[in-house]
Amino acid sequence: MGFLGFLRKEKKPEVVETPSEEASKVGISEIQEWFEKSFKDDIDKSKSQGRDLYQDVMNSFLDVRDAFRVLESARFNGRERIHAAANMIKNSFVKKTYPMIANIERISKEVNISYSGLDSFRTDASKTLKDLKSTTPKQAVLISRYFKKQSEPIVVKMKETGEKIDALKKWLDEDVILRLADDVKNKMKEQLSDVEQLKSLEKRKEEIKKEIKSLKDKKQERESGFLEILKGKEWEEFNTMGKELKNVKNEILKIEYELTNELSPMKRPLKKLEHLLKKQDILFNHKGFLRGFLQDPFESVKTKNGEDSLRRFLFTMNKMVHDRKIDLKEKEREKLDSLLEKMARDIPEMKRKYKELMDTKEHMEKTLEELSNIVKDKKELENEIEGYSKDISEMENEAKSIVREQEKLKERVEKERKDLEKLILKDTGREVEIVG
Image (cartoon, rainbow, N blue to C red; front, side):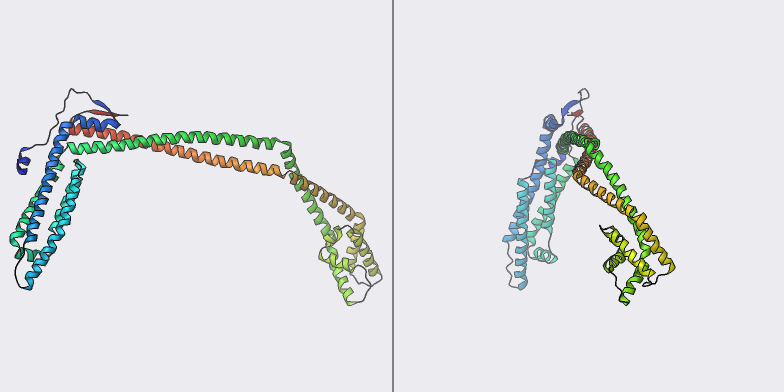
């Protein structure tokens, strides 16, 4: 039976639905095997038809190759330069066609007789034919003029090849069973891949659940340790002493401020004294103390002998004022007298209290330094608890993300199964329920 006769007489297989047959329940991993077994005769018949059509295309390409060989052996025996050029262009044109035909031959040996395999072959065959037809205007003119007899069969064979490729395409467009077989196979792979992904996600979800439990146990352990520190005597002592130290420092600053305020008014008259001592050669045994006092009154007085030095200095200065060796204004003399009075009344007590507070401060700081490890331990526990909280939060977010992804996958799996069931019913009339 010829190819055209085949097209005229053969009809596509029709699958008749059996109304009384109940829907088959088939596991997703067995759906391809079930389909191929259930429609074996139809599939075999379609494969046979597809194989014949594909072989017709290949035989036609071989006819084209033979026609090119005839053209290759031809030679125009003219003496003009154009004749030599025609022979050369003809040979160049022919030689480029052989690798194309050899390539489609190689492809044809690897063709899988399935819808996708035949459709891919049809695409390659169409491209090969298009490339074979590709000639330059110069090649077309010279070959058709000087090798008309040998080139005409090539045109005919190429036309026939194109018709056979078109016939294969038409058959593929109308075929149901092979396309459905490919759809079943591909969708089964997608389904199995989705199912495996669901299993993988479920496994990861369980791993996260265990990891979260472990992290929570560790966090709870650190929180217990943290609470023990806060309830302990050392932390209470550290916390209390820290507050007391702050109060002591404030008291020290207060005394420093008060004492500085008491001493500062004397700086102006003392500068006058310093200036006078530089101008006149006056015997004065407290020049060193004077320089120190003018730089920092508080520091000069708070030293061990500072109070006595200031007292002697002020008495000497007062005597110099009364002896008229130093000329002070009335207001400045009043300040001097006031400071002498406070030296006897207030400043000694302020210095005593200041020293007492400084000793207390030193003792507290030393004690706090000894207790500093508890602060370090507390900080480490706080950092660990914070780290565990962050890790737990990230794990919980990942678990939520997995649940959302699982839901999407389940919906997709269910939709794909329903779509495949409908496709099988539509194209075969067989009702099937895909499970698993």
